[in-house]
Length: 427
Image (cartoon, rainbow, N blue to C red):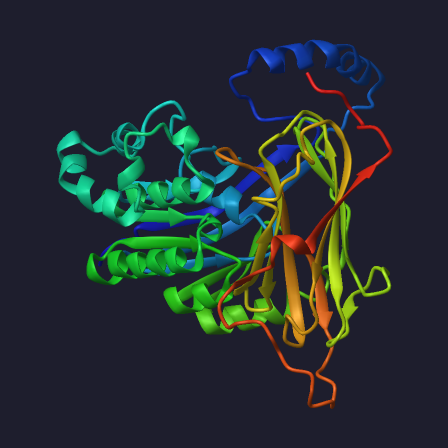
């Protein structure tokens, strides 16, 4: 009897709150460390430091057979990405073990393994080498990779000049074409457009059914998970809480995983970022923060940002998903004639929506700030949920949005400078 290609036994990963994992420091990290050293020393002497352990993954066990396509689902912070980092050998587990009986290719973040100063051509060979491929293998697959990624025109351009969409296309193309026995894909396909997402799903089906490779797929898009995966694993608070046929697990996730999301969001602020989201909310036509938007009335989403360093190429963005995780609408400020994020300070950004743009139902918002050529500076997935109320009985009310993801016109965005200063200065 063949052994499972992946065996996970009592796997756990704990982090000590208030501490960071050991990594190679930069010069800026050294300066920040010197400034914080007196405070850390005081905390050690006074016993005020936080020694509490946080288990990102705890007592997780499962087997995956060769050729299976398995979906990992759960709320943000459920432990999915930490588990994938352990399986990809990026981080070591605190307890238990994970055995992988095959070559692994991981696509966990946009551009992972790419060098920004190298061209797309050079990065294909670099990334392939990181994945353990020989040059002859890369040569054999090179034309297929370029054709799939659709970057022929920019093949000899440094990837630092690529858009986030070009980054993810090339990264996925390399990982999918260089013949790993196990392909691990995190929620990076959300960066691509609908056509590219469909293309990637088709490729993953091809490598699993046609070539017998194993795929681990993490996504908030339940439609994609249901279409692609025969089996799903559901995580909550770092633990595996359900495993079985995809349809059954997805149904449980949709029923119990959406009711506690909020229509107003205040994230924990990371002051080391160049810019951070301070708050975001859905507003009705009167300007009140609401959980229910009345069908037939205009509404808006306002996000407040703190900019700590000049970001002249930055743009605000939002994406709207339905209850099944399907992308319904996207919008951003790219192309607007504004230098809104060029100077430090606080900014309010509002995107206003016309009436009847969404069908009645529950929706989720992903809000972010992106810099051209670099990707997301700060992004929060599915951080807000809201409802659109039932259709009124007036026959003149009609649903106006197309079936495919629609874009809100740039004129629907508005900006306001907040008079409060930035919390911290730039370095």
